[in-house]
Length: 446
Image (cartoon, rainbow, N blue to C red):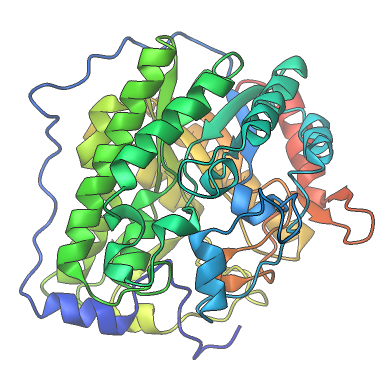
């Protein structure tokens, strides 16, 4: 990576931040206050610590059907790539659909007791009202195979992608702002839960909706690719939060003992006094961390923290990223490696929401095995530090199982515990996979 490279779009570019700041000084988020009619949840039972890992359907799954087949499908991300807005993923990814047993074998090699994977809405409903029942059965079978292997399956109902029929040419009516979204979503959630609930107890309604909303309606880097649409952004957030609450209600109606986990992108933001004298940028990023979660936290049995890096909240730091892979303090993507940031985020989330926490993603893009091992070892140490200080952490999930498609960064970043052999489709364990396997065997309880 080069010093002058524009920062990866998980963070807002300077132009967008400036436009927002022109609206006036942004205040810090207020204290979290659950709604008056908050969902009453039972205390979680004591369970063995959740050691796990995760995948995502669009990043991992092959289509499984040839173009022209009745069940061939496209997502909004396929369309976004066709528009030239993202690298093409192709139809094959790492074959986690047609060769799920290879994923499962890798998961078993690690010795984890939990595994999170997602359901691709477009695969299940490639056209409005046309349901691929065989796909639903296969997702259910994937969960069943995990259960048979002694691994608790966790299912994400939405991991960034929508069917392309919710992504029209008029992007102001795309995805969360499609007029049909809420009704279609409720039907989708109901059918997925009915198909999988025999083996699935833990559901994630939405993965990182806070990041996807910012990137789609403010930063223009993810679908629908709109630049600085604050009104639409706020409306989309309200719709998304309503969909989250609907999903939680449907899940609990179908399986009363189910657990709901909300998963959010939660970097540690550091105040830059000289570069941000009013703290407006810093407060803006705190809003990104908390606003959506504030709307749904009362429905969550657990809060999933996706933590990768710490960053100064300033215009210059958003515009430029530091040297990446060849600097020991940064990842391939130019993210600062800051294990103590995880401790601070865990403490903040614990104090704000008073909920059990799972570190649902934590990982590093690197081709260095030793750098990866150091990253995981030091972050686990900070997790243990937080637990010693009273934070109720229930699990830890390195991202990700196998090197895969990394959204607008394409295939370059290497986050996998396993690499992917393009010829045999085998998953090849990395040094960090061996480290993780040996660590959780030695320390089943952190």
